[in-house]
Length: 161
Image (tube, rainbow, N blue to C red):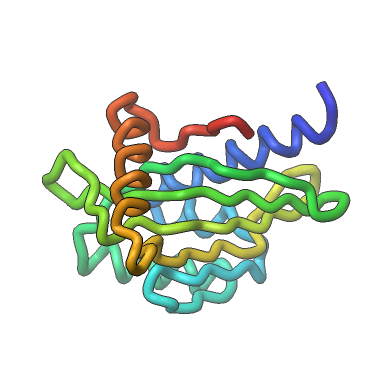
């Protein structure tokens, strides 16, 4: 197996663990997937910097809100440099107590992973709304794609990567 394939498989595994830890509301596990100085930009633009900030903010969020569960489809994985991998995915969220995605919170996620001690860690997670202003057919298409992932019982579909 080539190093590229291994790095790409590792990136998918880390991403899957990230979303799974969010869905289980485990702030410490979520934060542990980042480099010590890693950053996350939330759906609303909120910046979180460093594992400590990420974990404490998520503990607060989980303590005060019922969070929706992620479902995702990986769209791209590519090497940017030795030991640096970019993973891009589309995500949808299932609100608590519901069975269907809420199209209003579909998003695009970009994850920059770097090699640290023979493992990939997240240096940056960036979320942005997939609103597709003026193109409602794209929102519907994305929601249908993510609904298929959800219907198949998967959190992350690795797609053609």
